[in-house]
Image (cartoon, rainbow, N blue to C red):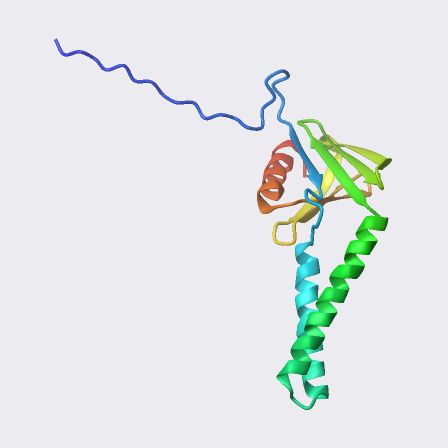
Length: 167
């Protein structure tokens, strides 16, 4: 008789399941890092930088050095002002998404400002922008904005909301 091989199958580990309650839970904070620049902010900065280069290049009678120095000055001034504003008005959002609801907690300068709790069964509409890393859900006429640090977070939340909401 031929001996049979024992076959063991590996189970896929579920990263989103809570071991205690069995519910799917997603949590994320925005912004995740100290110096965070949004993709839309970067896109606008590049567009304005090109405009500044073109304008100053023509103002300095087509001298490349003048255009490049103007763009460097513009971008550095932008980052200095942006850092000052972010230090003065430090905004942080924490998100908690379960099978039944989405909870958004906003902190400004370390103080809890607002807590929004949205039932996923009441979500009438949701829209996600995976490139600019933003989204919103509409429930009972109220719009709730969400922001993400990377595309993976955005897509995971989108899948979860599509599965659990009526929209």
